[in-house]
Image 1 (cartoon, rainbow, N blue to C red):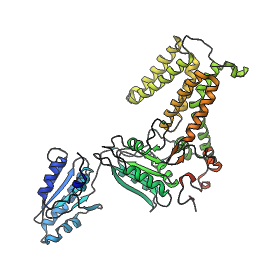
Image 2: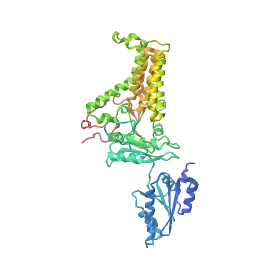
Image 3: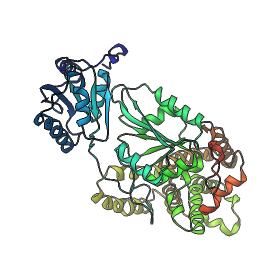
Image 4: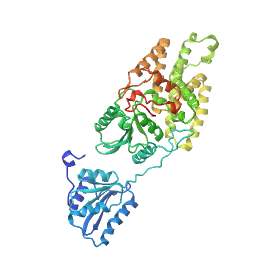
Amino acid sequence: MPSSKKEDMIQIYDSLEQIEKYMKDRVGLGTSFDLGVRKIKVMHKDVNLYFVNGLCDSALIAELLETLLFLNDTDREPQAATMFEVVQNQLVHQSVQPIEKMDELVDQVLSGLIVVCVNGYNKALSVDVRSYPGRQPQEPDTEKVVRGSRDGFVENIIVNTAVTRRRIRDERLRFEMMKVGERSKTDVAISYIDGVADPDLIDIVKKELENIKVDGLTMADKTVEEFLLQQGLNPYPLIRYTERADVAATHLLEGHVVIYIDTSPSVIITPATYFHHLQHAEEYRQAPMVGTFIRWVRYIGVLASLFFLPFWFLVVLEPSLLPERIAFIGPNETTNIPIVVQIFIADLGLEFLRIAAIHTPTPLSTAMGLIAAVLIGQIAIDVGLFVPEVILYVSVAAIGNFATPSYELGIANKLVRLLLLIIVAIFHTPGYVIGITLYILFLCRIRTFNVPYLWPLIPFYPKALSHLIVRRKVPGSKIRPSHLHPGDRFRQP
């Protein structure tokens, strides 16, 4: 059971036997094989070191032990009142902190630090010798660029904050750490630039994180998102994820608040509008004109993933909507299966393939693609299950989904597309028009951290919207986005 408030206030025992008994009863010392204690004598004083194997750097621990035991070779006989200070001074490490509560001692040990206890003192010393298992920073698979940095976030929060600070060497960059989860006690860091980020936004994020009451954050950033937003049935992402350190640093400089969660290679960027999910680092790694071209192509792809397939289905139902010159767009073959059913089967089939690709080992993914393209697709057309046009237009919509930089936004757009198809099948042209209108009104009503989701299109800010339409050169982007209410509006003096 999680410790009660009364137990949390227990002062560290001055007896090493009592500390050891507490660790055995509460933490499982002697039962859990990875929880260890090293008992030594330093100048005739008993000293215990508590640690968790696998989370600590063994070489550093050995070096600290050697330094402490070196005191036994000196002729100095310290007074009892100064023994704790002698041990503290002898710990040659950059991060040594005194602690006074038993719950702090337990938390520090389980977080991967070592805790040094000296017999006869109601306090202990925590030394940060963490060495979490994990991979080295590498380019994220979901946010690749042709040119640019190849490092990215990993599952270690210390590494993630370090690669961010490497890009922003500002003395006002802050990383405020807290623990979330009654049992997991996961490290969560709130990052912002003091004087740039809106203080109200910082306070809101802090309070929401402090109010999270859950056993643990085993799903890390996704669990935090659900507690922060509680968006219910709304499928659209209200925050932005990124695994790229340069993207996170760019948003920090704009005035966003970024949340780092230990064990997650993604960070949460707040607040995030609809258009934040349409941006990609590749646009800023090319010349402004090339970046603008890439952005426009991406916008066309997103629009195609949403509206192209329902529109084609509409003209199949009502061929009179098409001019005579392009009347050939409708299906040239007939089948016994309704077109809308074919579209749904094909669209869900692509979703099956996407899910299968996630669960298929990489060496087998090529074979699975060949099976899907040759055996399933072509044979389905040959036997008359699909007309060729259905496969073509469903594929165009799917490519538009893949062109969407945000995975979460792509899935939400697919759900809207399927809903539009149902409405068109029932109400035809009025259904298509009303469906798109209701969709836009739905997006207009969404707010994320009190920011309109369609900003700067609705409400309309022409200058900010022009930055979304045209990729401006960096020297010309002097003002930070106004929807963030930055303390310092100007990027460049």
